[in-house]
Image (cartoon, rainbow, N blue to C red; front, side, top):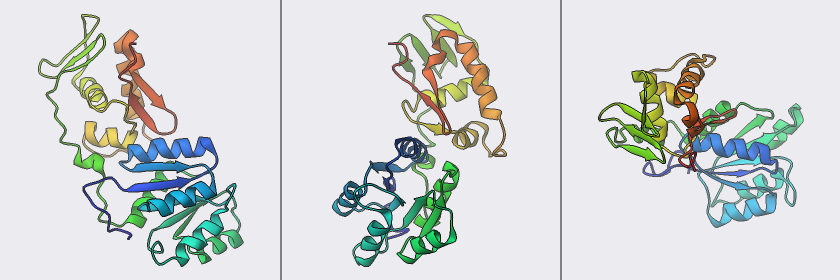
Length: 245
């Protein structure tokens, strides 16, 4: 099944992880990368979710309540209906014996905690195949001439105008583009690389503070309205359409 999913829909990732902080970060980041994500907090629930609606890929924690990751992986890989679905195992166990055991029971990849969210996403894309194209890229041609209104905040791309409580705000062209890109995708978490690619038109070094610097300037100019832009720690930024309520 790897690499054979329908390109007209988002690849679906099942995450079986009992640590809420980790599953929450994975959920936010993978959605920002264009994936559909389902979370299960214990092994038995996750196994049932998998067999009821097989995903395109499984992110599987090793140490789980009710059913361990090794047992889940082994049972799925022994079943010819599921053996071609990639499984990436997540574990805090860093010794060679555990990694080898995970791979021996059928895991397609093994990631050690703590891990980089970007690394996990890259490993997912590698398992799904090189034909993968992010839904975010397919949506890059979204309309750019729609007037957006969120409470007292008005964003008019036709006049290149921002108004907050009927007062005009003066933004640079890049700041306007950054705000409009976020506001036209409300509630969606956008990582820095996505913003760099779509706003600046190319990729920067991963250590750059370009996005953060411009975001800080934009928030400063928005004044009271700066609450419309939320920082999702370790992931990126999100426009909150309900900020003024």
